[in-house]
Image (cartoon, rainbow, N blue to C red; front, side):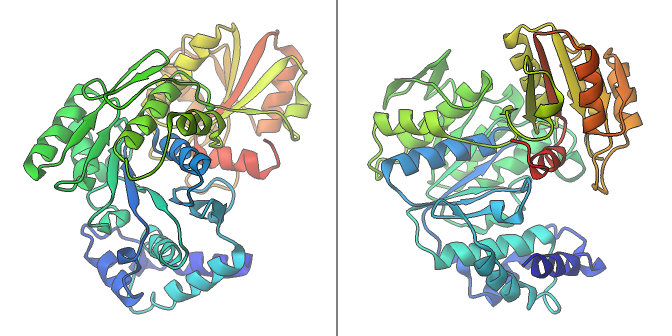
Length: 424
């Protein structure tokens, strides 16, 4: 199976397949050759945004499953195995079926070029169209307007999570430009749940919605979150989300707002509470409790993993560290090219005792450890480069005072390496 997937990925390295098509025409052509599976999907909730998309999907999936519904899910990137991207009725796609749909898709590539994301999205649509479910939770890969997932003409509902600066080489170098791309998933007459936004992002979304006659259900307008209490015309609930960090109350509240607009599903407040309490989403402020890495640290040291990699991700991690109020905090940080280490780390500077910069192993697009080290120093963090995560952990174990937190952070690619090594 690994050989089949690897061969498929290698075919996508051909120069003809390297460029992003700045329209959806190529995606429509590709799907038509597969029999237009995007027209035979379960009801779709289409989700865009910069941060919180995955957490929102995790909460929604848990809520629907607590009610007894079958849930398909499409997310990216994967952390360890490609199968994570395509979840069928609550389970990751099995290798045999994945091989089957990849063969269908790869057979088209010689005459119908497609990028990696276009081709794998087409494969996902094929799987989702062939297996029954009650709902499909679909995350955009990047942006919205020209994203390969945006071929869904009539989703059941759309949602936009907080927007910040990310993927600027494709989406634009301002919140306004990026918000305009994310708002491309809006559809006339189909409601959109809008999570917490900067003013300029919210204004762009509202302008697009007015033009399209899209009903909006907005944070701090139609619905509210006050500390732990969700308040809307439909319900008032005290939230206790399973995922760590204050920002998760906002994500959980956005999930509640989505449920408010889905009266056709028999979801009760009890189902919502149960789902929020049992949702899981790896590498988002995930505490590591087993594996080789934890064995390198004293029992009194907490080891955490976080895949946040943009300025808002740094801000969220900093807010959580402030909330923990622990003086001895060490970061092991690796980042990829295209991400701004200084912009990510500047929020963390007041809380970090020391940072160990690493080069992400086996990742072609990694920034070198020295680049991350220099960026950390420019924002006032004491930093050194380390040859590996293991070396950094051993060094920290040798001199850290307790209580102490160690957080491996800066990249979902790095997080995937950590989980693939058996840590969890």
